[in-house]
Length: 534
Image (cartoon, rainbow, N blue to C red; front, side, top):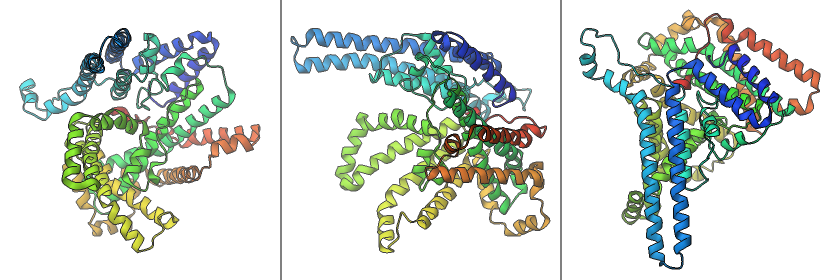
């Protein structure tokens, strides 16, 4: 069952109908059954992986909870008999036991993720493949990659760390925990949920709410528009430029990068809108994952707006873990002593910044270009920290108003241009390909030739009509984003100020537009979500 398709919508409709018919205490059961039906429809063998991760995380979290209870009981029983140092030592002993269970669990879950995602890449790039297939030089070593493994692995690790930190108690209900891990709208590409936010919603009965239901439908429709009308139409256009990069120079690689930026945003944010919309149909609110990232005025701000739940996950479970570690504390003291308070405080932050973004890069893939992708983003952010004092002096001396529209526009364009470098690394097949495309940009002679011969619309067989549809879609997304950036929601405005019949007439017209101009109407099929492969 592909996402998003008409089949998927029919599946959602049937699930919603049953969900509100059954007694409310069984609603979570319907969602769990639907989640595993959806998962099995995409990958039957992969269900073994998600079941194993669910069960082992559930059991290890209970074990950590039990250790916490023993610690609390021991402290309460011996509070008067033992000294503060003895109580502190006892707490540390119990905490070390919890940490051992946590580390083992993280190693198991990350080990599975690393095995299925990275071992094939390592083997296929070495002489081991020749040993495995001595008579078939073209054959590649492969391992089944379960659907959504990165997202449910991060979800379960975050849950386990929260239990270890005593943020909340481990759940005793394995069925509802399984639903939290496998909830079908978010299993493919997130958002990455927290148990104390989304998980508790599965325990609550949900009455049918018309306003919430309409909100969900509108989100789904908006997501289909971005995914099918814009992203999927751009897919063959972008694919041809990146796959056949040696034949394109000048403006074409630049155009390919710009169109890829539009494609990945429309694809990822569109699918997240569908995910959040489907969840809203069941009365469940998933966390926001995008906040108009292309309006960011710095790379650091961009990452606070793009894939928000991944950034928050990295901050809470990687950045803070490194920052509060003993080696980091020692280095921080050394840094302040060696470089003074100003730079001595920010230099240790560089370590955590690189740790986070190298993790993000490796999470995207096993190739070198993804490692450099993380390094590139971290370096830009670190450079921004170092140059901030100089930037403040220059803007003050030139009497530049940082809040003026012109300066903000300059910062937005500057940030977007810098980010094109990271997108080139992320979407190229290798570092060599990325470098070739970058150097080919400066061939102005071929640029003039393309413009003169109007061969642009032949790329990916998009055609002039298809290209015009994409541009109209891009303008619509831009206008909506600008309004949202200024606190204006078209959806809320329509729901509050437009009467029922005209409002539904507009919605139906928009549905017809998506049906007519969506990618599924071109006969080439649905393109899988880009982040599904991560």
